[in-house]
Length: 627
Image (tube, one colour):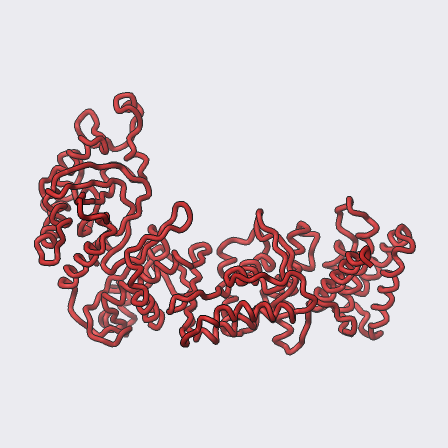
């Protein structure tokens, strides 16, 4: 229950944000909802004057609206009659719904009757505002659809019933297609209506008015259920068994907490009722779920409905463990060292960036890491949760960005090419392990598995490293850019894997290493650079070293013989220009122990040797004109 407690605390720490709508991008906005409220997309807005009379109305498109909400309304489905307290569908708020063709299943149980009865109770309570009283005064007249038709918002057919579907035959008569048919409503009967009140002294719309929020909260608090022990706060508070949905987005039906096992496997014989399993107060449930929704929209990362969320309970900036070094530097407003000779320079830059987050520490706040996903449309689960001291979290993150660092030059997307020395993003690790066409399901699974490696200092799963290693060893199966990206990310993973084994490897070439795999990798790099130099800039085909790379990793001695023989024409073509590279091949070969030059498959270290040697040769080539 610690994650619920942390979310409850986050809500209390951000009370000044309650009810404030924040725009995110051009067409997205989010709100920290007041308790006993939810959001709905409204299709029609009706404005009432201060005397409770109809003033005007208009059709809306994608109008997210904060509305009061009871427990029953939040969980209504099918034919169940459970009206929202104020704003709702036409079938609930229109007293003349049946008159204009609306269908109800039971004539003795009319939705409007239940709605107007509940609204009257609120409007006549000591907590009611003038706006609630105005809306109630108007709606009890039972002529909403009549006014909407007169205003031209709703359209009638020839039988004076609401038109179910748009018919082009009405276009000439009405002068075009009415806006209600483009509002997103399934049909006119299912349109959702929100109400506003025009008052010279009020500048806030009803759905943004704090007095309206407080009015309904105070009114509904008196109607809550019996008190019970809250497992989260440890106090006796009004309890609830109905918990919020719409956690990830407005259409999300999955719940984190639910209990409907009343038949069959009734709680597996462990409990008689759901309250014996867990008791959560209404206030905690509302605040925790509303804070979670707000945080997801504000800073969560979603891959195929799986949410990765990191937040600090003091609301200070927190780097995300799934980010690469470039993102981390950007969030800390620092420039990244682009071409360091060793990892030491980068380590300093990472330390400075992390230091930017540390500098805000006036006390010891906590960092929360939460991963959510749903297997079905109705059930959601917490797949991963950690609550750490912020200082410890930053230490773990710093260690990851230092030890899983490598030199990268690749396209992040169609618009951005990045070049940096650092740790790759977990999403890019999925790219290296499974390729760019991997499904979102596979990508989100890998990202979840990598989180404990970063946050809990666990070893990188061997299957991920192995998969990336095999893909990096098979360049002919990929385009050049894809292979280069896969190679550098794989080298970062391999480096981290060997650091876990107390072996230190870096990007800079280790000329003194006697490891056979590393030496074989160096040989392959020299062969690749030599042939590439002979082919010239206009020739884009793969060299023999690249073509035979997969076979070379499995049978290095035998494959090297083939590669070396294929080099002879290119050595002849280059003439004296190939002397340095030919001598380098001899020097590397001399470093082998005689027994190591065999066909035993190479370890992952050969990729480190290949990358570092090739990098050294191209760097030397770039420096030669300046010498």
